[in-house]
Every structure is written in structure tokens, then in C-alpha cells.
Length: 541
Image 1 (tube, rainbow, N blue to C red):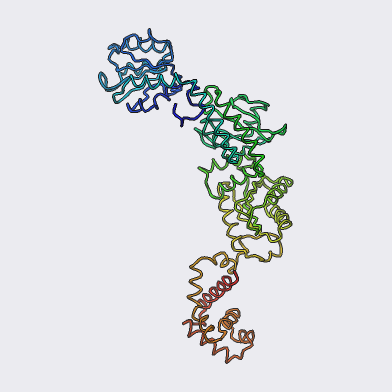
Image 2: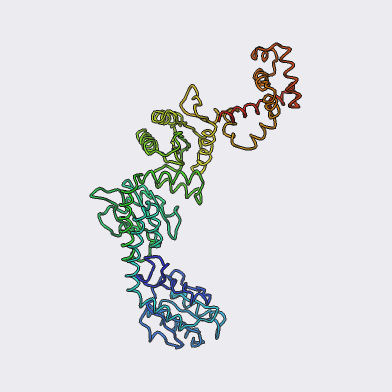
């Protein structure tokens, strides 16, 4: 096999019919499997070219039989006998070229192969049969040397991962790529922390994970276990066990794991041990972070995929409600302690949740609630803990949703609230967190303060007035502020500014002239009030 072939699917395992059909030398003939698709995993022991009417007498079993179809009997009985002899001897498959004698496979041949479960493959184009035998036989004969080379490659690959300080995700991903199998890292309570699928989907790989994992049973060494024949090995250090890594067969009927699979899995466990010692972040935190980021950014392939991933982490994914909470520490850097403390607080309260860092200094918390649980007391408790650790923190909560896949919306709302909350914003009198109803005009404009459209609007509305004050030493902007704050009441505005009514009227006329606005218009006063509030926000921040 070439260097890119996955470990565990290379020549240390029997070369299958499917493997041979995928080789470029045969693929050039445009092979089409007519019968026996389920038998394409049959091992190929040899390749035999024949133009005899009784090729089985020269076979020992496991051969891929190549023929141009020239010697095939004319009669149905003869065709059946031909196929029966191949099937009885254990031929791996029959490959017939549709170039010389036939341009479509005879019905009698198709029926006979289907009846005996013998894979029948047709070639639409001419293929050099001798070259096929040379390529396949070279692969088979080089099996032992290739196995040794690949084992060395496995060791070198995992050593390289260790030397560059690879994290657990990189290690598990490498194991899946080298083995061609699905690889899962789980903790001691059978929660799937990292899953790298191969030949399947995450949804299928992790479905009912905890139940299936517990049925697999424990073990102190590398072995195939459980009703699904998982290959598992523990991950531990100096007697302390942290979890285990499992390699899943692609299909229930797939052959047993080979020596290379065992090597890959054991080196995976060793490399994970080193990664755990190097990286201080617990695996559970990493798993929660990845799951939350996938939900927030909607990187899942489907809602079912999202539910399966979260359920494998111990989060009830159906039948309840979900709330997205953000804790912005306002420190600009990640800290492990708040993440750990908040998760512990939720576990103490018996609330299933995912807690993870979504960005430096910003933690995401996904609450999974069951009736009659209410989210407000839970968030209040979380906010109290967060503010106790970081008094400047801002805790924001999004809307309650009933579908796990919709939690992205809840987190988006929480993010909007956080962005609309300036540093030092006082808390509502009745709670320690912020929600959508708290966002008024000033906080909305605060969230949009860097938007050039807001800046351009502010300048267009007030620019000429600001320039006049600057050039003439006046303070018409303050006069306008008093007038707008008084909802257009000139007497109140004059009193607030310490001005006579005549002076106030004069200044208002000047403002109208400079801005080309009618201050008696409620709509235009609203526009100016928005612009003035935006100016305050931009200047403050």
C-alpha cells in the first residue's frame, strides 16, 4: 500500500476485493459491481487470469479471477456450473471484461453469481490483466515489510505529537486518521469528551453513548470488549486513571482489530497521558468549550448531531428548555478558576449544564432545565458567584428556548446584551444579571458605537452645531440638550440652563438655522435626541 493508506486498513490486514477495485490499474477499466456488494470485504489472497472453462481446478480459494469472458459457456447450465465451481473453491470475486465477447454481462451469469453470493464485477474498458497481477501480488508479498514500516511510522507520528505539545483533540484526530476507525476519548463517568468519526457520523458514533459504553465493561489492558467489539485501553498515570480511549469498528461484521490498531490505540493513550500532564486545562473543560462553540457558531451538521454530541457529554438534549448565559469577566484574558467554580456551583445545585470559555475573558453557560425548574433563580445564583469572583463582571442571559439547536439564538441575544452594557453600568434593582428588556436607547447605541453608520448619522445631524460652538465659543449643544431633555418645553429648558426665556428663544432659532431643522416637529426632535445620545456614547467610550 502507499504511504497515505490508513493504518489498520493497510496490507497487515487481508487485501479486500474493494481495495483491489480501488487500485488505479483496475479503476481505469471503470469497474461496476453487478452482484455481491455486501461481499466486497472478502480478502484477496491472489489474482488469477484465466481463459479456461474450468478455472476452479487451478484455484485454492481467495483468488480474484480475471477473464475476458471468451471461455464462458454458451448454455445456462454450463454458466451455472462455472460459477458454482468458483464459489465452491472460495474465489473472492469474478471480474469480466466487456470489450471482446460481451458488451453486457449475460443474464445467466448475473443470476448464477447472485444466487451463490459471488461478487461479479464488469470492466467497461480494456485493462492490462498482467499489470493487475503484478501490482496486487507486490502488495501481498510486501505485506510483512510494510507492516514493520507502518508500525515505525505510527511510533514516529505520536512521538512528533508529543514533542510539539499537541492537545488531546489533535491526538485523537491523528489516531482516527491513522487507523481509519472512529476514536473516542471518554472520562470515568462515560461521557464522550472527544470524538473523531471515520466512515460514519458523530450522530451514529455517539448515539446512546453512556449506555453502550457501560455495556462494554472496564478493563486494565488493551482488548476488544463488549457487545459491539470495541477496542479499548485505559488512560492513566502512576496508578491514577483519567479515562479511556475506545476504537470503534466501522461495521459490526468487520474483522477483528489488527496489530496496527492495537499499536495506534496504545500510543494514543500514552500521548494523551503526556498531553494531560503538559496542558493544565482538564479534558472536560476542553470538551465543554468545543461543544459550546459548535452550538454558538452552529457548526453541527444537523440538529440531531448537536443533540447527540451534547447528550454524550451528559447534557439532557431533549424534553426540556435551554438558556444561554454569558459571563463577561471584563479582564480581557482567560481564567480557569471562574470556569471551574461556576461548573462546580451548577453541579452542586444539580443543574445539567455546559460551561466553557467562548473568548478570552468571556464564559458561556448552557443551562438544561426540566419542569418545574425556573431559570431566573439559577442565573441569579450563577451571577452571585461570578460577581463574588470578579465584581466588574457582566452576566447576561438570552431567551429560553425549547430546542437545543436554537441555543445559538439565546447566546446571540446574551452577546448583544453584553455588548450593550458599558463598564460600570449599574445592575437592575431586583437582580444581578442583565437581560433583553434592560436595553434602552443609550445601551443600544453603546453596542453600535463603532458602526460607521451611527457615527456618520451623528455627524450629519450635529456637526454644524458643534463646529459653530468651537469657532464662536458658544455652547448651543448644551442648550439643545436641555431643550430635548425637557421634551420641547422652552420654559423648563431655560430654567435648567439658567437662561431667560428670550435668550432661550434666540438660541433655539439659531440652532434651527444652523441645523436646518424645525424644533417644533416631534419627529425631528427625536432624530436630534438620538444623535445627541449617540454623540455622548461615542465621546464617553
